[in-house]
Length: 292
Image 1 (cartoon, rainbow, N blue to C red):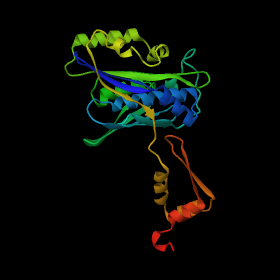
Image 2: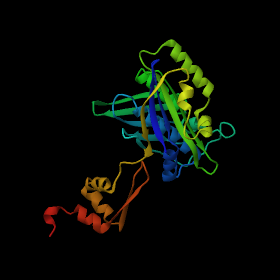
Image 3: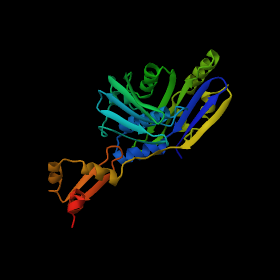
Image 4: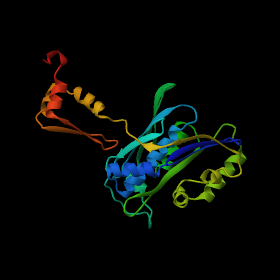
């Protein structure tokens, strides 16, 4: 089962790790994603979940990565209950591989543009900030955002491995941050451990459940697990919500859709389809005061 776990150490380091294989596969199937789109959206969804786990507040995080590549905009919402949803503007994109077996997410997203992050919390006013895209590879872009917009030095590693048949083999990632009391020795040790670890995708390929990952990154430190919860792809859309949207239409727009036998509405975030018959819409659009 997919999960997110959070850890602290006596040496002043905090770490969150997420395994999101089933979550990313659900998104792939729902949106009929081609491999590079799966990799981009999967990294972004994992990154958003890690950003939402800020150790302080129950936050919802919206992530919008707008590059100049063929994928268009990557849209993700991560919620405080560890559910996530998202989509890319163009799911059927193919770009040349970087090298054998390596998807070029940076080329698909684009090297120019911006990362926009909005944090929603019950304890403070909503906050939106942006930073320029650095590579389009997602992890580096989010780390740069945290450093420039929130002044939090962070190391982020995100990975999605896709089978030739388009199936998601593994997906996940981690974020490591220094707390105010972190020592230079602890920071140097973490940097050494991460360099020795290599790409997180390769580690997850050998350890699909992420076992041992935290111990490798935080090797040499006293580790304390402070959070462990399941993660899943889940949208907040519903038939009632779409019905509410239809009710806000102008009268001429309502009349226009009543010309069709059936109206179909599709949720961008999860690709769920909702159907409303003409008779049903007539009843919805008729004020209660005139119903006999």
